[in-house]
Length: 426
Ligand SMILES: Nc1ncnc2c1ncn2[C@@H]1O[C@H](COP(=O)(O)OP(=O)(O)O)[C@@H](O)[C@H]1O
Ligand SMILES: N[C@@H](CC(=O)OP(=O)(O)O)C(=O)O
Image 1 (spheres, helix red, strand yellow):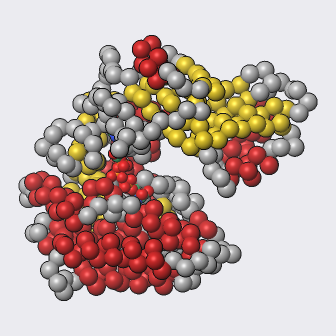
Image 2 (cartoon, rainbow, N blue to C red):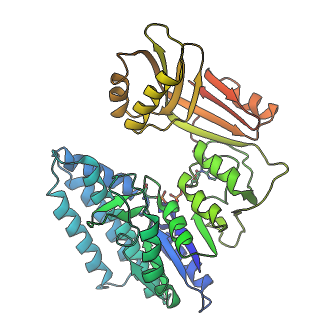
Image 3 (cartoon, protein in one colour):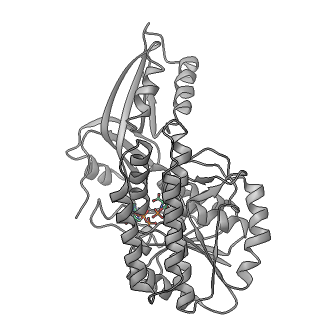
């Protein structure tokens, strides 16, 4: 049993959906079926976020919702003959979404209602892909993952209940995979009282790992618009190098530091169950791509990782007290309380600095909660650069012309926070 994950870029239009069909047709062996995890088409999740934002603030969301409808209808028109039943299914989903949007209550939980709305991207994509596969005679069954992937109600960042989820997958998904491919949604889960949850933005890679761990699968393949795992994002750096083979450990660290090609939570379930992860190009499916698995490296090309929209905050006790375990625990408790992840930290005698993702809503509240005890200084719009497996040449190359506010180096990793960013290549 294998798991394939197709992200937004791989199903962004009708031609892309056809290409997914071709990839699956090439896999048909008759005896081994594939669990297919699909994300929302193209930039649908961003568009649904905009629709939700307007609905929550009681603003008119008709135009962005209608654009989203037209986008999906256009894809269907190009893929299916007229009067195909998929049309009704997609219409039903849009009607359900519209009905939910009309009940949105600004005085109720933002994050909970957000999850109910953005989940429609994956529901639409999975219905369309499943119908398309059936249409081109690839045996396939649609699966609603929400009663299967059981989570807690931490909206937008739900935690998986592994025991329940594994039981569900063993009892209801494994038997299905004896007969057909199964198409399901990435990114989504469900609570015991049947509310939809999401696993964190870009969380469909993680969904693939959850299914793979629980089946267990022989491998996971995530299909991307790049040749595989590269030593840098090709949108930010020229002359990137493909890792043909790389260890789970190297990859988990790259994902943690911000290599957005793989969601950071994806690696752990695969590493502990020794399930190889292939990163392959949906544009060149015949190319080998990258295999991430149990292996050792003597030497590996330095990896350049960039995290944008960073904030560097420094704290000093008002009475010049030393930084110690007690005031650090106060700062850490506030970071946890406001759900800030520490991307880098450093302390000196009387000052503690932390680099986190900027968040215009939570940042002021977080700082307010500490301002009685600490003098707080901060800079926003910063970039955190990381070089894994650095050499001196790579440091010289990357730090050239940068205004550096803080830097740190360990035996393998060099990081700095910079006022100078990096531009996306056209
Ligand atoms: N180290 C890296 N190797 C390859 N791609 C990377 C890397 N870091 C960032 N990326 C970016 O990740 C993108 C693919 O991931 P993503 O957009 O999340 O795909 P999808 O949403 O289709 O699953 C690439 O287009 C590339 O710009
Ligand atoms: N659609 C969700 C989940 C996801 O993982 O998408 P993608 O595979 O396209 O990154 C998001 O955009 O966050």
